[in-house]
Amino acid sequence: MRESIYSFWQDTGFNALGDQPLSPQDVAYRDWEGVEESWTGEAWDGEGRYFKIFFSIYKGEGKAYLFLRGGKEQLQREIVAPPQAEKGRLQVHIGPGQIKQEEEGFSLLWQDINVELSFLPSLPPWQPGSGRLDFDEKGERYLYWTIPVPRAEVKGTLLGEEFQGQGC
Image (tube, rainbow, N blue to C red; front, side):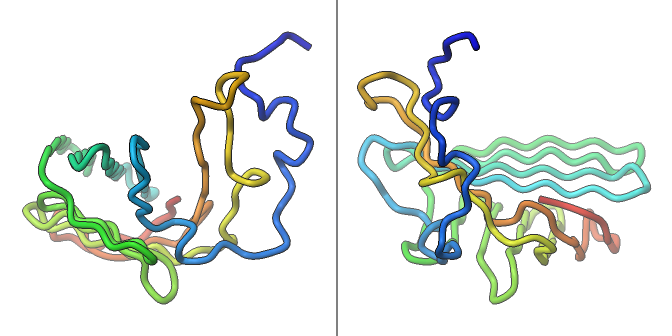
């Protein structure tokens, strides 16, 4: 096996599921100094419509990115704005975009183009081992990886039209 800078190749617990299910705090904004935190969601249907949204907070700056393909239309938006984020439960607003933890799943919104989608998980949340993946030998560069919705049924509106499909 060739060597890798990623420690998880050698981590025997990488694919092990923890004894405890993920809590709302595990996917929420943590405000760790010097650490970029990000969240993403995707949805698609059998009619060629596709939606992807990405949120990132780093050193107090928020970035939100949206890509949307709806039939013949294609939209992209990128926003840099001060973020509003709760700790303890996922709720992040950046410009017109929002990702929010609901009682059963998550919702994604992008207000100025009428996108409102609910993600209802069909698989439980997952993370590799402890969730921490080191990128160097000293453990100074790392990534925490948690997948709150590995697969979901998605319902809502996309560009003002009814949407029903799959997502993650």
